Length: 219
Length: 219
Image (cartoon, rainbow over all chains, first blue to last red; front, side):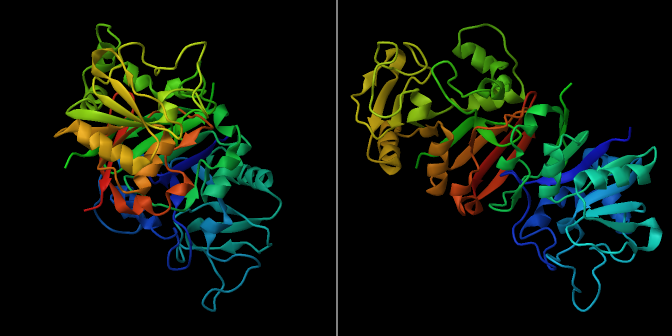
């Protein structure tokens, strides 16, 4: 069966994977950009944003792996955009994600939300589908869409924690960035209960700009 | 002025520096031993416990640094022992620390407590002094005792957080161990307020069994 994989969740030394107070101007929360410094150096990132250059070492390897053999993405609504509550225009226009007219997914993306919304078809093969009946349903729909390929689970932290509690994540990569945030959203928050007991660390590798950790279900 | 240094605080991937439910049988809390696996491999640890062997690479370097030019130690009461509330015998005897008749300090150790206790002189140059009038007083007394040397701050986590809030720590080394604890005491707990804003990461280095991080006051 296709695996559910998390890639490149960036975590501060004090445990936060996003800064506080996400907004249109600060999609990653206040200070959240600093978490991703290691990522912005990589060749894979440069390719995504259409720039030449970038490093091709350890960090880039982890970055690139996040795009290998992925047939669908599942994400929380906070990763899709800044709108909370019922859907509403942002700056007078329908919100269509943070990523411009051609998002870097190129496959179906399932957005978890409590508020129904018609699918949004973007250029380059990305279609955003909105799932209102829970994380299992989103996973089922994504599996069907991905065929033989794997699924990538995006953020935010609350979404990852939900799937961790459900024991549904097969591979969780996060990168510890050498920054302190002071506040924000924790990945390992108290609501995980005993979920972490079912996981173990299968890799801890130093990169150029971050330390990479991979968790997987205990064997 | 002599510096206040933290060395070898071991942290789980989920941010805990001790397991829950510390007791006589589990001085580091349930699961806490696993945090220190990297440490037990080092030559410096082997020397402390009087055994031959041990690794002499990155982990050992961090371990050894914790004993260089230290003239006094400050620690919280939970690091000193399992007794809570008023002092009381443990298994019929006065509690004299976890470390046997000759503790590995060989200098004055100042134990923070709310309950007065006479000093305890141990073999090998270690004397435990009990400080009931707060963290500043303990620091002053330790500075006087240390002379030109530095001070080492031990745990537990609550004690380190108190000194972090006071901005009194000059160098904080912790080691991220590749284990998940699921519960326990956090170093970066919510009561730190904006203390972490006054610190920055000055080093992140991969060791053989842990990833080492050093924080210092922002310049």
